[in-house]
Length: 155
Image 1 (cartoon, rainbow, N blue to C red):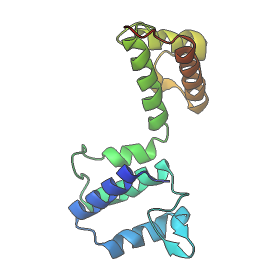
Image 2 (image 1 turned 135 degrees about the vertical axis):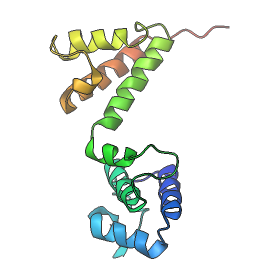
Image 3 (image 1 turned 90 degrees about the vertical axis):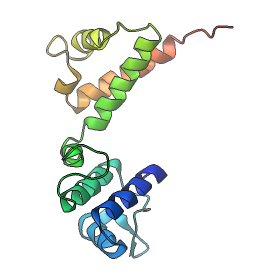
């Protein structure tokens, strides 16, 4: 299900691209089978995924000439093609949180070492080189590590 923020962003992007409500529904109707609810097409359909959102925004981006709102040119096209970008973002976010708490070496060094030693078995050390299964393993490991090593609150 798209979040309220995603729905607002989609509506703003359509408005900025000069796409009316009928055309927006037609884009969803033609491209997203999960948008159907009780025989109607809607962007509030519970089965619409984040991947659907990126694909929808890439269509709007193309309609607008390659750039919408404050995003860089072809941003949404790249997101729609790269289905692992959300997983890399989550892993990067976890690593940055651990770095900020002093639980992982700073400037990506700790993350690179973690990937090299614990996830890829020495084959790679960059987030961008991990496949789906490697990213799942990394996210699960970093999440467990963060839970096991909470930072004590200071008084």
